[in-house]
Length: 72
Picture 1 (cartoon, helix red, strand yellow):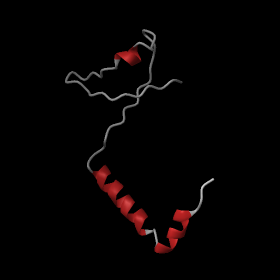
Picture 2 (picture 1 turned 90 degrees about the vertical axis):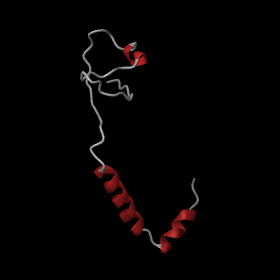
Picture 3 (picture 1 turned 180 degrees about the vertical axis):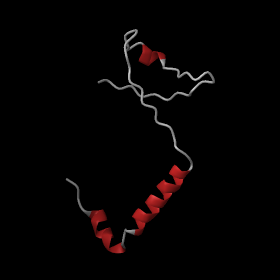
């Protein structure tokens, strides 16, 4: 299955615009599957901040030795 990613907005009449560059790669009347990803709310930003804060609290000064481990 081929995937195309682009940003668009829902119009006042409830339609989505598809960029011409994507349309040109599709056969007319070809069935497509649409997945819409939309922000849920401002709570997402709060959860992201909380998760980051909690993760960084688990970092101890003793962990700094791993910051200088050579890479291959």
